[in-house]
Length: 69
Image 1 (cartoon, rainbow, N blue to C red):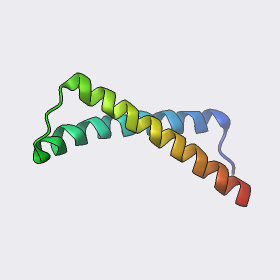
Image 2: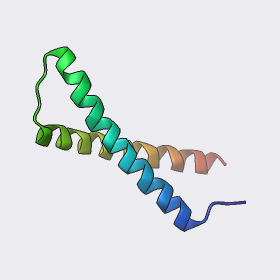
Image 3: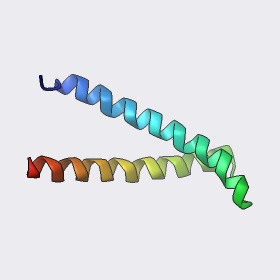
Image 4: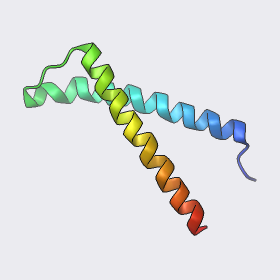
């Protein structure tokens, strides 16, 4: 059974929220290992940049696979 547009939107939004939270948390843990310091504001901005790139990547790959289907 195909996924409804509403459920697809919920899945995409959940993916973005979880990805953003994981990106920020990972940065806060990993950056100090490399001697990098970033404020919470900086971590939030960097996380947003990574989420943006991830969204573009995910969309592009989905379109490629949809074309192959």
